[in-house]
Length: 184
Picture (spheres, rainbow, N blue to C red):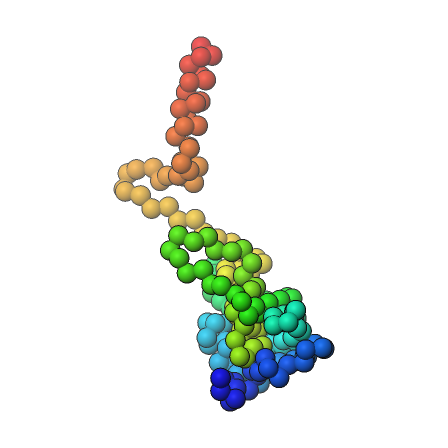
């Protein structure tokens, strides 16, 4: 239980007010933005801010509520041209003293992924980076970009269509043949 914080943004749980919310406001500087952008494989990151508060829940648990805002630039998945996306999202994390992490190979993962183990420190900067990583579009696209369909087959053979590639396409064709046969 080191008194030295792991980072400049870490808040020691023992020092947090038990009666009132503890506000925080993070606006990383240019070098920190560049480091986060590199870690998240972004072409650019601007206007990153995370503001909110930590408040006690019961005797020993804590809840962090905040608002994340950022402008991210990523390459379009179709054209590789830059795509700029504005992200504005609410973030909630609950830190529980008696949290039990299920670590069994066949265990069902709980749906609530906003609950974490309470440690000695709570770092809003780590929560900010995690929330940003989850909010970034997985497949950014320019509004006017179109996907191209590529069909590859052996020379002299007809390429398979998307309809034919579906698992039940053969059954649909068989059903049509049966229906035609019964009409005659």
